[in-house]
Image 1 (cartoon, rainbow, N blue to C red):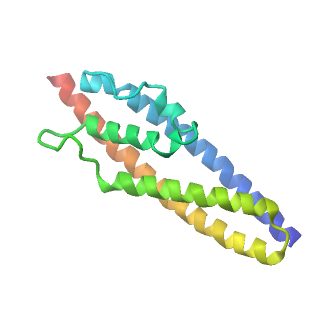
Image 2 (tube, one colour):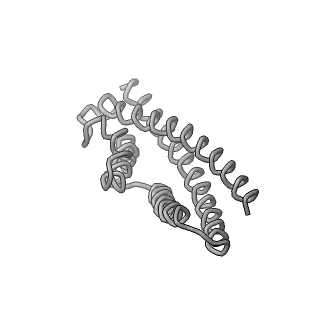
Length: 163
């Protein structure tokens, strides 16, 4: 059990490092993209720019503010004739996987701290593998959100520059 715990701790540490690096890159992109809304739209964004970073870290607000900002990023680069409130299902799926995996992971972590028997550790290992799978899906969806949003914003910026 000790060797399994050591392996799991090493994998968890590596996963945590990868998560931190990915989060830094993602939040930097998120902030930069949101800061570009003013020149892209020609109007003030719905929220202050600092929300693009702070929204991830303020409890309760972190359940919805980043998604609102992501929606604004998408909507700011809408094509002519596209409905003003349209946001693709990709954004809902990304956010759902992110929130669900985070909630399950937090509950699993709290249970792991108080676990004391092999059966509980075994069950928590399965839960951890499940949340890792959810995190992988959320990460892939986040990459798609970044790529599609960036492409749309680049197209809109080129149109705005040529006009």
